[in-house]
Length: 172
Image 1 (cartoon, one colour):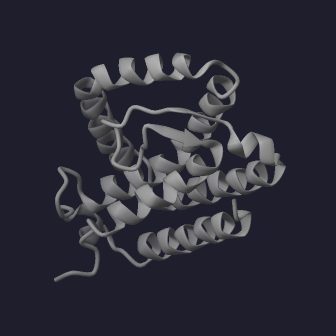
Image 2 (tube, rainbow, N blue to C red):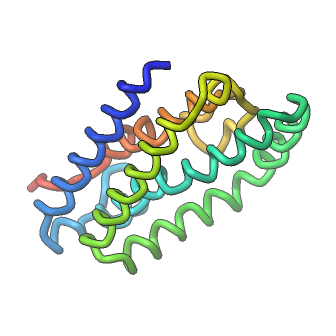
């Protein structure tokens, strides 16, 4: 794994997120996004959420990566079975978070979570980064059937870049 490329991904997303939020007025943030039920502000929160949940995903890999593969395979199947409720919770959580958290607070939280991901990545051993587990592929297009810890560090920026294209900020 090229740790430097992951650090660069995190910094690129951090700078872009800050620029997007700080250059958008309330009217732009209230506009609907493209291809989602969220407003731009709610979608920005959802993009932040991808980084926040990555910390939990890393913890799951640390646990399941030490167990037989069948354990995470069964867990992933269970999670895939509850995709519909997950999708609704995912929508409502970002809806509520985007309406509750002030944009400046989102930027501060983004900064904090990226700092934590940088520190955690630097502390990982090569053996840690090779551990993996099965994931619920129906939950996110960037979840693969089996992902290593190294793969999980790439996930939030893949998620971010995908949703970045759905924002309608700066469009008349």
